[in-house]
Image 1 (cartoon, rainbow, N blue to C red):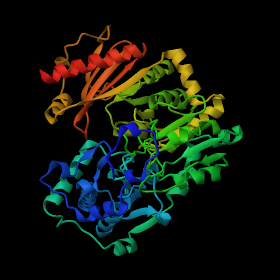
Image 2 (cartoon, rainbow, N blue to C red; image 1 turned 180 degrees about the vertical axis):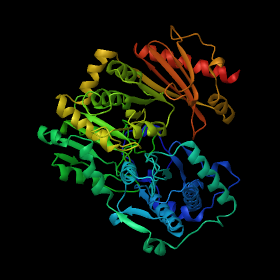
Image 3 (cartoon, one colour; image 1 turned 90 degrees about the vertical axis):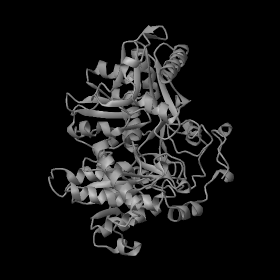
Image 4 (cartoon, one colour; image 1 turned 135 degrees about the vertical axis):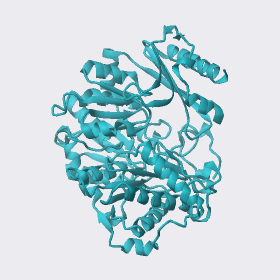
Length: 549
């Protein structure tokens, strides 16, 4: 596989850019991580443990150790209901599924897997957990999703969703991570394991109709009668992901004019156009990666796509092409809180602190509380469960919201529901989401946003993650007085792992990358592109000065 070339962004992937699936899967079994190497240990980020078999960062040993650690965590916390196990379409997902099932069966965990060996989107796991646990105090269910989300084809991923159905919080992942690394250190001697054949045949391994249950329940979230009656022509590209048969079933069961434009399941993802850095990455919010669907925009009233585990969405409109995630999130918030009369009157709008301030303005006009959190969907789980949040959204095109009656739907990101909501919005308003976004800009101001990455050493990243407001000397940014300097999220007081500086018509936030030797600066302006570039330049100067102090 040739190294990525950013100059090829947006072009179809060539044969020399595709992974060798057989070699990758051999490496999964053959390479053993070195527990003494921090880069090869189990490390849970905001979406579980991720890595590549070739680099000894996602291998059989990792999966065996993590799964045993989850079994130990379940026992210690009295979780004795079924565990819902799902996978996406990445090349490492099936081997990891087999490894996990061997350990789950050996530990006597009642494990529910997809009927017929189907792939399973992340939101289907969350929905299954929540439906099973409704009204229960004992026999509670949890789940595992084997996916690296939108990451490149060579990557693998493994995440745990506890009994609340959402991404596990830090206290849970820390315990699992610590136990898994101890198991790696001891050479996996405490891992219980059956053969693949024994695991499949175990009485505790049972099939579950994820597709049937999830698709039927979607009618409690989306107004399909309205969409069907509108006669809208819809398109969807599953991007080779776990939702392919879900979309086909949705179209059939609800009688929609929905064209699945890409039915390929290919672990090489050779049908993709290359992302901004010349790599294959199934990101439905990235214009270079979405060239295939963008080229079809005139065929549909509205079209959409999801990443391999279907926890992210991308919306393509005839009027405006691919929408930026923040723009559609603002449209969703505005629409949902004005067209869901049965939602709790006090339900708020949840957003991460690097999401657009246009969402803040929408919430203020709606008279709804704004709950601004650190990055990570886990921060919205309790609010969605309790109904104190009607909507939770991340700037990276991840969102979920309540059922039409105000009950909890999915406490993990759900790419399918926001995608289908774009059709409901178009059907009800007679305008597509981009046209509605332009109206919001006229009413509330137009945001201009960008992100800039800069090199950072491990020490600098550590220093940035621990910055306090007192260390920021800037009194104004891009000609405006600084109103706030935050190191904790206003919505819940949790540390943001960086800093956010807020002015009247713009802001910037700086935080270290969890996976690369860089830090990220996010910025937004409501005064235009020139003002945005000025904020970015001054933000980088502020951060660089602070880090070198």
